[in-house]
Image (cartoon, rainbow, N blue to C red):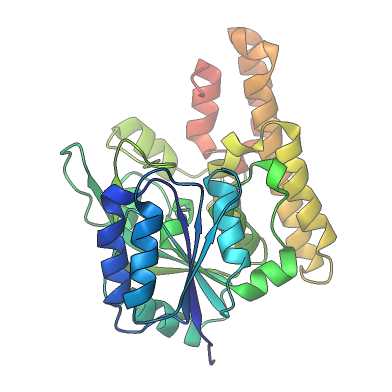
Length: 332
C-alpha cells in the first residue's frame, strides 16, 4: 500500500526554551518530510525569530503562519493540520525530541496498513528530576491500562483522509485535536499502534497537556485488569470512552462527537456507528452521575452506580475500578 508525503503540523507558543532541540531533531530525520507547517500563537519571546532562522537552513520546506490573536493550543494545532498538504500528517509539539527514524517508521507503518491513525510509544522524561519512563506503553500495561489510552498528539500520525471523512470538531467545542483523530479512527476500527518509542516526551511546568496515566497502586491495577463480561469490557472503543469521560462535560462536547458519528453515515458501517453511539451514551450516563446532586449522598450515589452497572454503563467507564470509585464518591 503506497503512501505519499508526510506533513508535520507544529503549534508554537513561547517555546524558545526547548524549540531548538526539537527543530534539530526534525532536521536530522532519515526520511525528510514533505513540509513543516508551523502556526505560532502570538509568541512574545524569541520563538518566531528562531522559526524564521530555521526556515532559511532547514533541509525541507517550512511554511510559517502567525495567528492574528491567541487561539489556544487545540485550535492552533487544528489550524496547522488544516494547512498541511501531505497525505500523512504528524502532530509535532515544540518541546519534544524526535528519534531520527520517526518519520521513516511512520511511513513504513502506513505503507502496509489501512489504519487511519497510528499512535507510537514514547519515552517520558521529567524536567523536575523524576525518573524517566523508558516506554509509556509498558508503563500503561503494568498499570493495567491498554495502549488505547495513549492519546498523545505528539505521538500520533494520521491520514488526511480521516479529516476528509469526519472534518474537525467545532472550535467552540473544546475537543482537542489528538482526542478527535484517535476517537474517530477508533469508531471505524482503524486505529493502529507502533511499539517503538519514537520521541522523547518532555514533561515540564509549562506543558499545555502533560497527563501521564498509570501508577503502581496494586488495587487499582487489579481492578483495571479484572474483567466481568458483559459488565466490563476490553473493547478498544469502550476503553477509549472511559478515557474521554472528563471531556464529555458540558453537554455541548458530547453533542459534537455524537453529531460527527451520526452524520458520517456513508463513512461508518451501521453496526460500528451503533456501537460507538451506545458507548458514548454509557459514558455520558456516568458523567451525569458524577456531576449530579446525588453524588454527594452515599446511599443515593451507590444505588445509582449499581443501577448503571447493571445497565452495562461501566463498560465505557473504567470498568470495576470506576464502579468502586463512584460507590466511594472518589471520582474526580
